[in-house]
Amino acid sequence: MNDTFEVKSIGSVINEEGSYYIKIKEEYLEALTGLEDYSHIDIIWWGHLSDSNEGRKTTKLGKLFKKGPDEIGVFATRAPFRPNPILTSTIRVQKIDFDKGIIHTPFIDAENETPVLDIKPYRKMERVKNCRVPEWTESWPEWFEDAATYNWDKEINK
Image 1: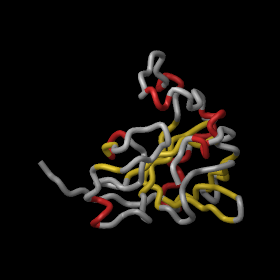
Image 2 (image 1 turned 30 degrees about the vertical axis):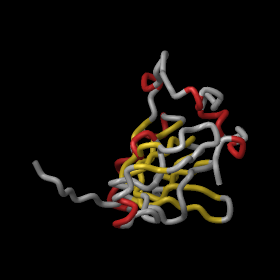
Image 3 (image 1 turned 90 degrees about the vertical axis):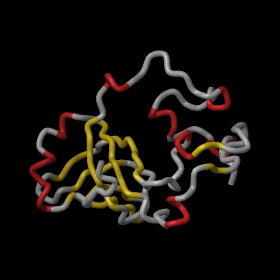
């Protein structure tokens, strides 16, 4: 089994002055064909700001959420510190400029110049009817659209 893989960026997140978009490299522009038919897409990105030898050794984290456990395994979180800092965000597509390779979105939770590894269309069948989550997350929003206006300050330890 090969334990080493080569991953190349296909573009980057641009987060400037409240404007958010994904900028795709020229050699991948034709890969955008058909994406305009989707209202939402999943962006797979590299957590370059948390990528360190120390961060990659992190297997447990402290109390991240006020109602959460005192310790939690990194695989039970979406924290950026992990063995491979591969992160995902579901975004709403506002418009796509196919000539420039720009996917406009109202928000993405990634920093400016974050490397984008892949894009996948969001499909309704990816929802799970009877999803089980920890009790301490039961009050969190059920829908993507509601998460943007949810008061996360009452949940997250800072």
